[in-house]
Image (cartoon, rainbow over all chains, first blue to last red; front, side, top):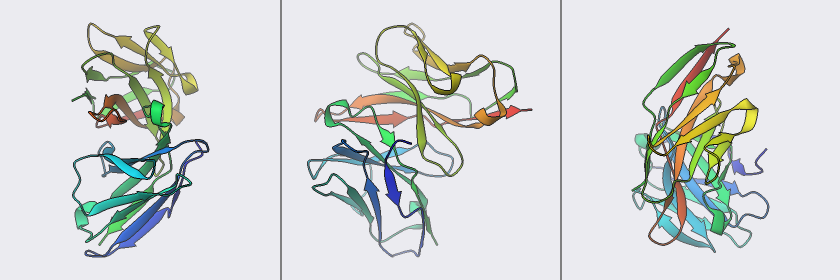
Length: 113
Length: 116
């Protein structure tokens, strides 16, 4: 058990709605990264948070935003949902200076209808 | 940009036989390479990593990987496959962004099917 938790496990939303996904990192970790994994694909990097700021962003539109709290937990928000946003959203935590050693949570399965 | 390629969408092997899941990489500088496994409806589980040192890296669940610099490959191997090894396997490489922050870049995945 890597210690990273995500909620909810599953979520069904309608096009145009907004969604918030949550992640608690492994104890002692200060950096949180979010990935989107579409069906049959590898995880794609969305963004990474450290010290409550977005530090780097992948090729995702502004509809995807996030937040990191003082306790290092993080949220991923997606606005104006599209059918193509249906995917498994993975949170990974790490230490800032060893951010390549990422521990993944179980993911949140988002279905947009 | 750093990248990895997994040329096989699926690998089929009989239980008890050796298995190999292929990965090639393209990086500037020294590669940090990883293998992860994903079971249905689950997150990614870390198997092993290569950062430096011996070219043969041993990991979890009896898996190992061979780093080959001349062939830019990092193939995952296991001497004797189990039905329970059936899963989706991802190769990944560290990408150090221009800000100094690091992320992982994943391949497209290889589905391993071990038949009884």
